[in-house]
Image (cartoon, rainbow, N blue to C red; front, side, top):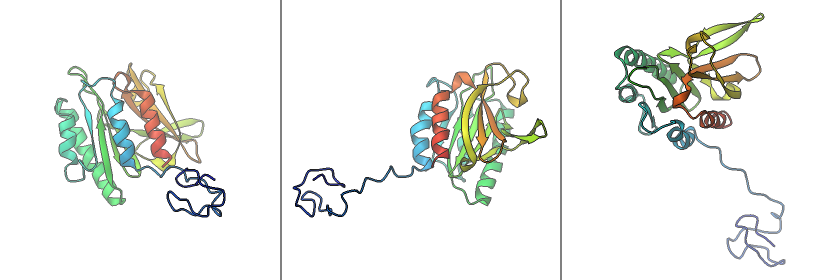
Length: 224
């Protein structure tokens, strides 16, 4: 008889496992529980180091407990230290808004990721992660919801997307002049939202990001 808990073999007439002491007879049909629910922090710890295409890109990431509401702006400044002043100022303003929103909604800041960028091209995407939601910015501009308005989509600028509102996730090329991400060489993450036809979309330059890892990470966050 195999123990349901430790997996070791026992005699057929044993009542308790001789290795771990678990009761055998009434628990014969019991199976191991599934994996414990993962925390946002553990998901970020696994995936953020894998997102960059090359290790020498500017940008980077910080993860709790190395970041909190007190040092978030300083850490964002460090991630964007080589960016243009205008971009850094925008991200400072954005981080203030995010920190305020996280605080007001009882969320906990979990990490920040800044995509790579070059000396000639200062358009990094910056993503803030709380325990409940993603806050996304591209070149200082917020991500947006595309809301149905008759047969057309209405763009509503809002940087926040709750993990539990996400249904499907995909990465698609951004067409020229399409929204704020309408430049060649960019892609956008499209998250369809539960129970409606609205989309939450945010852009990034595809040469800096491993898109497969980005989708895997968002899927894990939404399935927590």
